[in-house]
Image (cartoon, rainbow, N blue to C red; front, side):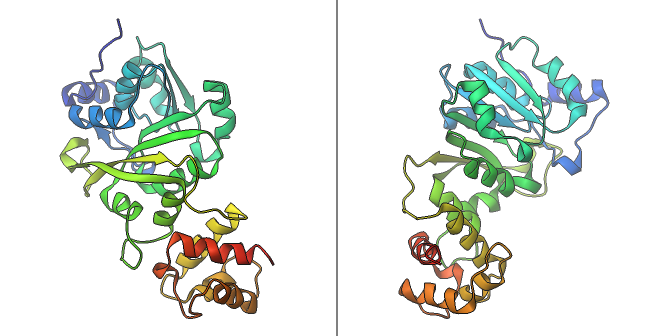
Length: 290
């Protein structure tokens, strides 16, 4: 019989932190979840079963990890903070289906990791992400080429709002477009600061990103599309052609940028914040011809 999770209870969390004489480290964006209902909601939203291999990023002291280990067949938890390893060894004792890797997820070869841990079969990502690097982690997961079936992650509410924003709104941006290309986002639950220790200064949200079997748009070169999206929002209030010519990752001339936008049937004065994913794809395909 599997061991029951216990760290969702704040009494146990505080006891563990006190016994090791540690506190949350700001540089790693650490806020420990102390709400059992939120933890269970994340596991349920991810649809974790004993058939699943789950990738967790930033396990901290192992709170969410315990819930994942109870539900999943296998859990691979990537923790950057070496000082937490002895605690994880303690709090995860009794769950033999967990492997903790001390590494920076942004520097890991995720395809190789999934091959090692799950023989290359798709994994589910479930995590309470460090808020200060949420977007880089999500983009790393998507762009890595690793077989990821879904992501169910805790993020700042404003970040969750950006992931499912509409064109022309203030929340609409590069993250919105990238997420919509790779996955279908849905907010599962809004989480009050009181669910964490220490309490963050913002509301949070659990958001589920179900990976598309096939992207909603076809493009000749996915990298050009993602770079185009980044370029258009580097200078959000400027017209798109300026964003393209000023982007360090591109070498297109002003004339090529203007022609690509015109060929896509768009006004040369258009800004990226006004465009849909389909329109970005049309421009990217024109740029791919140069």
